[in-house]
Image (cartoon, rainbow, N blue to C red; front, side):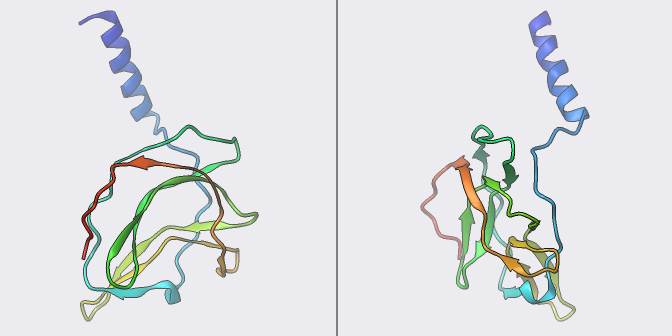
Length: 135
């Protein structure tokens, strides 16, 4: 194996072993009233290419599916400026005892759990455009 190939493999192993991750916002749990019943889970996540971090203050929020009441729609990942004191509540699922699947979309919350407006988006991930609709 060439020395350059060994360096590339060693670098990849080092990145994985060190737990490299993107700067992410502080998180909060989803409040119980954020959940809605959905008929089925979303499709697999889409692969996206991340743009360069536009600002040292920017935090990354992953791309995700959101339920619009009739179907799942993809929301691209993005670099955002977290609202002051805001915490990110990632999407969540719960399975009820009666078999209902409950979903809470990602949202921003203040310290008391109240919803905040979405933050300013600085740069959006680029992904494969798909024309099919998930129903």
